Length: 537
Image (cartoon, rainbow, N blue to C red; front, side):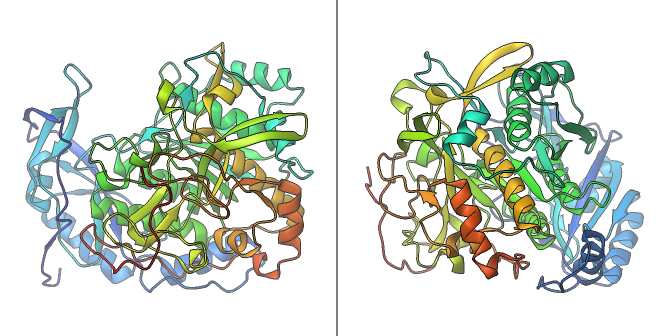
């Protein structure tokens, strides 16, 4: 391996404040790690291709890992006695296995066992950031296996004022005709599972045939029903499946770690056997809780998805503008804050038939029923397609990406009637909005006869008419108002109007690959450029 200067992965690495050290990791026990590598050239626009397979082959040739980088890192791994499990140059990953002792020496860490709650499930963690052995390495994932995300669903605590089936919500939002034929929706899950007989019962009750559902294991994750996260999995499948019943639903199950999350997104984005048009993610964590290296690696996977024509819909969070962080500063959720995704905020929807009677920002914090996430990234710069949206500066003055982009019904008190582990439940949360928008995008793709892909430029470019502008309510630090706001984005959809606008907008056909977003470190600041948070509490 050529001489290179090792670098510490990130200066912002820290153990969770509630992590309790339980003892050192046995030196002879093995761990699997994933090295995420840089692209061989900066991400650019792909040439139009006749098929997804041609597009993917072009992408891999242009933007996969550099063979020279791979060979240097293979040599490095052999020098440290690490076993190569797999190498996927298109996904820029090198998967390795080694003993704790070998990995500690290779990456300059001290592994230990930790727990986050007394008597809780222990996890393997590191008190130090990994040393990156080569400039080609973006991140080393798997040395710290702390949970990085939580599902963004809320089960109604009080008796809901209004409940809807997904079909009724689709009617209120005037979804265009279609059933998702020809579309594949990838659903990312970091826990839980589904019971097929429950799904059969649920869809039969809606008068629908059960959609085609395939479970895919990532890094040993699997469809394991029986826990709290089942509500997330079933909600995602039942909402997207009801509104796009002819779409193929492919559910990727991975562990709740940065390694599992990255590999699930990357595998779904690059699949050539079940190539997705849409990806739905209802999991996330406060942007400030992510290490820079892990977040940067995740962003490259999301950029890959966008470049390959996959629209990624992501829940914006259920804990208001704080995102559950006790710092007192507004915080956005990641991956919703990624410029490569369509971030989905939440509303309280009251309607009948196809008539919306009222729709305001979802904020039921007074009754402990949650509130929509939203705010301004302190990591990702303001994208060009948001430049006229009057996004306020972040609390630290950074001119950042505004969250969310769009919205939909999320209040558990106006929640979705679903079936979970044999029990009828009413569930809300922005977790419902991500699959709602995923199904809408599947219908739009079907009618447009092409994939929207990285949809934000097109959606911001068609103006406000195809959206229900939400102008009442707040999520804590930010208040709704005319046009885009940091509670509900552009608003909730008028699906048929969206289709008509996109059909008349040549720039939506098809979406180009992003040029590559350059996330900043948490300490990077840009001068503020106008605007303060609306309705600052």
